[in-house]
Image (cartoon, rainbow, N blue to C red; front, side, top):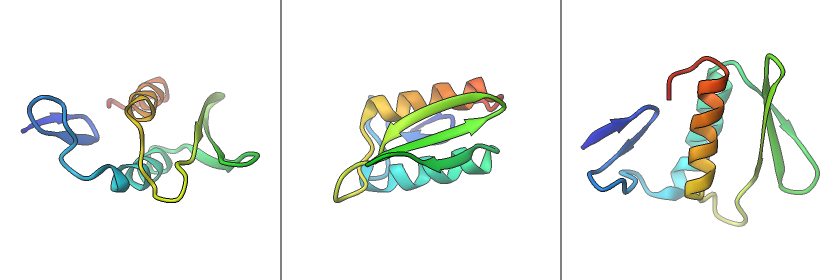
Length: 84
């Protein structure tokens, strides 16, 4: 198992935890990194810190994060000064 910053992955890049947990983890980690969570219209969720903004669409029915959302969260964490 290798560490991929704030999300643990198995060899081959598959998530160690089930994806339904990852959305909640992403939200908590971005807030813990100092970002403000702002609910937008519909399913949009914005995170803002020091003028940097990232927007996500909250997963429907079950909270399953998509791979592109995990990549975007990592990139945002790096932009706000957290190593992902």
